[in-house]
Image (cartoon, rainbow, N blue to C red; front, side, top):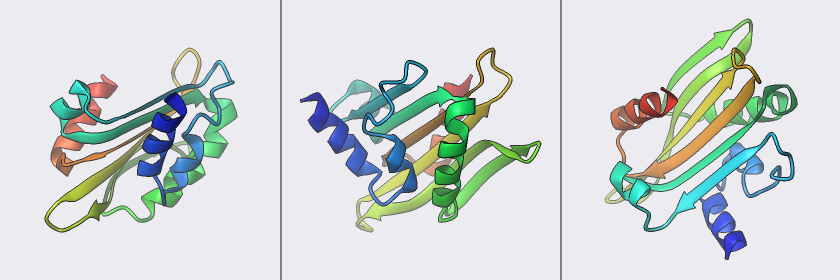
Length: 146
């Protein structure tokens, strides 16, 4: 059942480069935390989401893996908010092209954070999709980040 849930969530990111980090590929590493959520969950309903997936791992080990994937997907974004520090991507919020029909679009978003100031620096990727509008999605990310 858990494997089916991971496959279902991972399929939401199909066609995206970041799909390569989801689906349990790195869960044997104790520095990695992965969350995948879909279906009829209160958290998703309350936020207008269909899918929610997170990856968090050690910055030194995963930064060079994750950052190029995020930037590749971000190249196709319809809107973006990006910040670099010392030549490295520090923060990114991308509105990806919607999927689904014109009547029922599924808005897709990608968030990246390289927290180099943390006691144990980490990188984090959050993918989420649903009927949530871009202005609400970015506001929600700012709430989650604080």
